[in-house]
Image 1 (cartoon, rainbow, N blue to C red):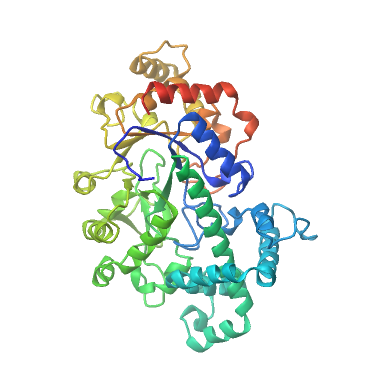
Image 2: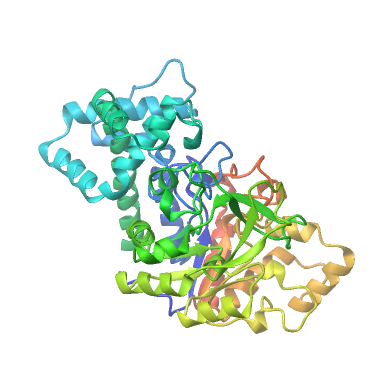
Length: 487
């Protein structure tokens, strides 16, 4: 199918970890069937990378690698590489160690049972992705060796890529390196099969690209020149945003900033390689924190909050030009929330990128509020809320009496009406080409089912639904309103 954004579409926002099984197995395929039945043509997910301890998909150990925790063990059994009764007696079925055990056993099964064609496919994957896969596998092995410490806390020979030391690892830990590469092969194989299943049913996969990468990642360890680091490899400034709607002290993300001069001198090779992976994974790619391509908030590394910092210009125009030159048909969407200047708007408009409209932000009382339905544009994506917002039911429950009266008046509904339902209808009726509803809003769930609260690190990214929550009534409501709004 040919992906396009120039038509009215409805989508659902649900990360893979929010599926009942939290992986790429049968529930993921069943979810696609649900989307197809409802008339939904876009499935939006969050980044697919390997998370750190906080579970945030926006802080990954690699800008390329998929998260092995999302691999379906049932599919490995179907491949014949894992026995149905394989298990680890010392690990919980839901633990990371259990998944590592299963994948190690699957690699042994693959090595012993795979056909010549399957082994050639694995070799081809490794060769095609060598530009990131070799460094990533080495990084993960060394991270295990140093008890999951950040790479800047490793001994100097490994921290600074001493060739003799790395060659010793390649010789003595060859099987472990190959196992990590196999995990990535399996992830991309399962993801490709799922994406094909979706595309064959008219559904596009909409992915998310964090603008920054984690300091503790294979990317920074292997490409220190790409980032603003001291000669010792430490950060002098970190990324974030100043105080805004989400936080009075701003958000101190702690990611390293890019050395845009170096990137331009290399014709943005690192970024283009990153986009190559993204375009293989997704039909549509959202650039998270798009405004960081115009200028980014640099916070001194020793500052505990994001209050003190400064905006520093970035080379977004040159980067986007390079991306569109390399990937002619790439479909990008700009996450343009927060403090947006005329310069950021101009950069987005120059490349005709759809921006985002959030209905929960529409009720400031200002007639020129860009999130009000009457101010929407066709070339945009409208949401009730994103993964960073409260659920719409939870948001509505927290409105004061005065706020509720104003919201109902703005939406032209009775004061005792269901605000969450009215907001969802308004999203679908918008002139915006793309309308996205979080799964929580389709299921009408409250704040306990929120995905993430910005500025916090505990209790996020854990929500998942159960099929029994999706009633026939909710399915028919969604299908009816998608049809009624010509999506």
